[in-house]
Length: 436
Image (tube, rainbow, N blue to C red; front, side):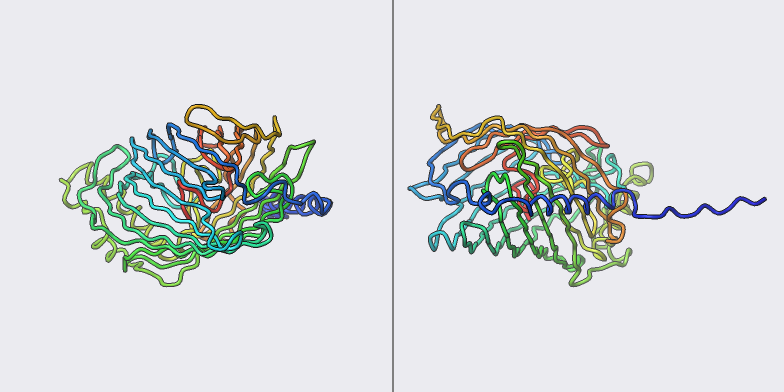
């Protein structure tokens, strides 16, 4: 009697139903929300004056540790215009300033602008969801960029569309292997960088900064451009849907569904020999032996990743302060990305408490504990996005002020735990540690 061939499992792959269930729960719950519950809880162009001068002790996974100082002034001159500046030094250096919410037309046309410079060695992992955490290089770069954004908004900021332009330059200083050894030769010429972003937001919630009920839909189209004929040009299209379901008196269950896709518009070089001659690590300059062999192995991985990026582009990465918080910044990337998560926000207080202490003044509106769970994956084949998911879960504490949320999160997953201290809620489409 011959053994029968195992029958393939019927039904969707593991994890396939989770985003469908999440969206169904979200839409069903919101259907039952009374219309008056979605009235804005407060003025979306608040004028509560405040200022903060604060020490900075930053530990951003994938970037390193740095210390410095920052200052923020909220709602200057009886408007909702804000100013922020910071300076950090350590494993990475960064400084910058930004002027936000400058009204060209009151409550309708808003201008934001900023300037940032940096020196950083970003941990660069392998491409794909199966890349190993101990397989990386450290490209150290120095650069600066300016960014400006023009936003058109109506109906108490329920609908917004914006155009963001960023321009600057970057120079690769050196490339280190994971042991800190520099490779023999890299292209250290300064190269201009540009990025144009067109976005729209539909915000049907009770508050823009601290929503407790409603739904927010964001769509973003980015066009990054680096002046390099070897590399492909591609657009990145992101969709971000977040729902807020009220619990008890002031608690909230937040549910998020996110999708990112790269769309190649001009394909770069995919010939290995051509890339090796023009973008290789010059391993032949090393003496024959283990060091040269290790260099050649790294060069092969890097050139294959360039070929894959030239063929498929690179969608928004997973890992860091926004999505899959137990993994470092830029941990997972490919041509497509999928993410969904849930976060329960337990509001310990619900208040408006003015404070005026040394070097800080403002209004505290709440203290919050949060519990979250997330799953996500990346793949060059969009048909495989429901397979091989990575999981992250944890807890955090938040201080909600009149113009900003300060959060501390502890997350754990397959590669261990990470602590983060950051500003604003997660699941953003734009953050200072990973601008898009």
